[in-house]
Image (tube, rainbow, N blue to C red; front, side):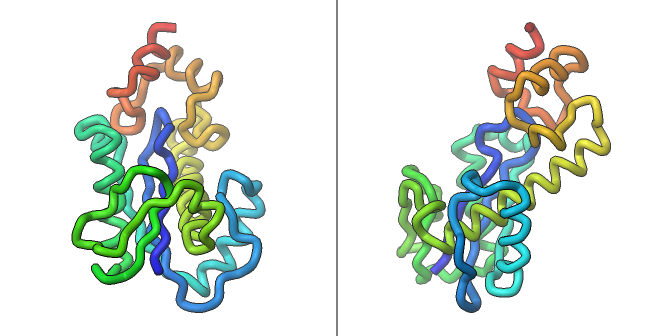
Amino acid sequence: MVGVDEVGRGCLAGPLLVVAARAKSELPPGLKDSKLLSRQQREEILNKLSSCCEFGEGWVKASEIDKFGLAYALKLGVKRALKLLGADTGEQIILDGSVNYIPRKFKNGRCQIKADNQVPIVSAASIYAKVTRDHFMIKLSDRYPRYKFDQHVGYGTAEHYSAIKDYGPLKYVHRTSFALIRQAELL
C-alpha cells in the first residue's frame, strides 16, 4: 500500500511537496496527521520512519504553480512522487483529501478525507512531507532573512504579509499568481 499526502498547498511562498510513502517493515506507533504534532515530535518520528519506509518526493516549484495553477500542480506533484517511489500501477494507493489527483494508470487509487490521521502510511507521508518542506524553507530563510521563512515556512502570517509589503514578493519564491500576494503588496 502507498500513502500520499502534500504540504504547502495554502502557502504564499515556496514549493508544494507531495510525498508518496510505502512501508518496508512495521510502522512505529503514534503516527497521525503532521499538523497535530509538534515540530520536535515530527522530527523524532521521521527518524524512525527512515528505517521502515521508502519515500518518493514530488516537488512543484512556485513558478510552476503560478504557470499551471494549483490543481494541475497537485496532479504534477502526485505523478512525480509516485514515479520517484517506483509505485506499481497495481498497488493500492490512498491519497489524503477529497479530490483524486492520482494518475489514471493507477487502477487501485482512491482518495480518503482525513486519511493523514486515519491511515498510518498516509500519516507517514504527511510527516515526511512536512519535515522535509519545513527544512527547505528554513534554508531559504538563510538566503532571505528579511522574510523570516524559518518562522512561518511560507504561510500567510501577519509577519509574512508585512515583509511582502515592505520588500515585495521574491521572484521564483512567492506565488505571484495568488491574489493574496497582490493584496499584500497593496497593504
